[in-house]
Every structure is written in structure tokens, then in C-alpha cells.
Length: 412
Image (tube, rainbow, N blue to C red):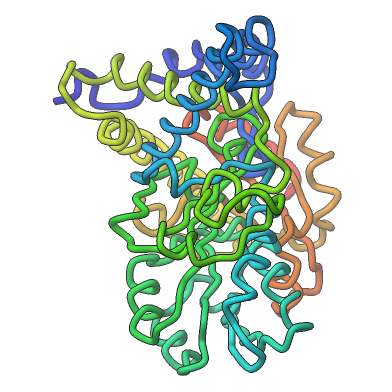
């Protein structure tokens, strides 16, 4: 049972550098704040163990131990085994390397279904395979339907479909797609899936085994950690994929075959700080129990989701009263339907000008295409850029009220 029924925002904010809270910060989808625990893990690695890891001397062995712990805990975070998880520089490079690794398993005429809703990271690398004869099939979205429909996918799948690439959550609209249902439908047709979870992982529990996904990617710097990307892949498919590293790494070396650049030592060590942070929140909000790390994070994420739903409702209620604000995506705040990422346009005000206008009130938002350019270009919008306000669990109702007041002042 929880000791506290709601997220203790004062306690949450104490875990981060104090200077963050001067502004109301709403560009968390671009990169989240990092708790002190991550900073301390990074600093201690570089102060104490900044050597090549894994050699038979105490400092080198400690460095390897710290890296392995970060890798293991982040695998547990998503319900995966450590050898199924590759940690590299970013989600974009992880999917690019993955696409090249799978290319050798396919032949000209095979098909990949790519959702137009994707961030470019889960779009461009697959589209590049057209030069090898792979056919790209568009899975379109529209203003009327910015979440993905399984029945639409059913019409696109053929016996030649090899993979379906789609987002768990659009980094523009915030709508949550039904990963389990989409994956099951793709598997019925004999296809794999690659799911972009970058916009989902900061807000809800990731459970790769429950969803039966073949590949799942997200970015640690959106989940309160250093600038790294995570790639999960089913072990049997990773073994079959073609290694992209140095020639002397064997094909069964899953630690190296999809990470040709090699690991970033201090950053991987610092990932342990994410686990420290989630455990800190767990201990503060819940009675002690024998749960494992994955179960503890599930409990924390439930508190996060409930708090974020209240923040989302607060902003959506304001937007509903303003005819001048045109929201992309669903207007329902329920936790199973959306995360607190909102994009919109305001009549008569160019989107790219709005962040500077609200900055005078010490409110931080952003505008642009957010690497979902194909999606925005496909819509019937005069302005191809949007304003984005993205929240995290450390945002407060007072933050949202400052945002509302600043936006409202633009409409007067």
C-alpha cells in the first residue's frame, strides 16, 4: 500500500538541482532534467574510474562493474534481459544500425510499413533501404485521426511485409497507440515491429515482454538520464541480424554487434542514477516490500501517470475555452489515451514566434516540426510548424497556470 496517495512534488523537486524551478519548463519532450543521483554517478565515475574498463586491476574492474550495473538496471527497467539491450549514442543511430543489420535478411520486393506519424528516427533509416529494392508502404495519419488504427494496418499488410515501424506515442500529438494490438496484428502477417517509445518511456512503464515487441527504442535523456539511446531486440532476431561492428566480433556477441561506436563509459555508469532516483521515489511513497526493481518502477509510474493526468486536464480545460487555439491530437486527459505532450497552433500568430513571446513570463516552450516533419507536411495546415508544450512529472499545477496565463495574454 502507498504511504502517500499522490506524488509528493516538494520531495520530487528536492532530488534535482534547485535552479531548475525558476522557470516553468515545458520542453521536456526535447530533453528532461537530470536528478542529482545521475549527476553524482557520472561525476564519481570520472573522478574515480576514468580508465578503460575490464582489465585485471582494481580501478579498471570497478569501472566495468559500474557500467555493467547501469546496463543491467536499465534492462530491468523495461523488463528485458541484459543481452537483449544495446545502449548507444541515440535512438536515431540505434535504428539506423538496426536497419542495416536487418537489410541482409531481406530481398528486393520485400515491404516495410512506415507510419507517417513517426519521428524521423523511426522513418528515415527504413526509407533508405529503398535503394536496395525494399518497398516502403505508408501508414498515413490525418487531423481527424492522429492515433493509429489497427484496422488501417490490416489493409496494408501483405505476405511480403517484413516490418512495421510506428511510434508508441507521437512526439507531437501525445496520443498513445495500442502497441500490443498492433504488434499482434503484424505478427499474424509474419512481420516484425520496431516501436519508437521515446515519447512514452518518461511517462509510463515499458514492458517489452508483455507487448511481445520485436524491437523497442527510447532515449535515456528523455527519462531523466544522460544523452544515450536504448535498443531492445528479441534475442533470436538479434542473433540472426548481421553484425555492424568490427569484423573480429562474432555474430553471437550481442554486446557489440549493434554498437559499432562502442559504449560511452561514464554515461552508461550514470544510468544507475536513474534507478537510484526511481528507488528514492519508491521508498518515499510506498511501504517497504520484497518487490524487484521492475515492480518498484511500475508503482512509481502509476503515481507519475496520475499526477500527469491532472496537469493534462488543467491545460486541456483551458484550450477547450479558446477557439483560437487548434490542438493536434486527442483532447482527453485519461492516462491510457495520452501523455502530457501537447501541440497546437494559434490563429493569427506564427508558431515559431510564440516561444519567445511567453519567455518573458519565464515560461519555456518550443515550436517547430520536432523531427516529425513528414507528419506535419502531410496535414492540411497553413503553418507547417506547431507550438509544443510537454510536461514531466516534476511540473506543478502552478507551472501549468503560468503557462495558461502567458498563452492567454497572447489572445487578448
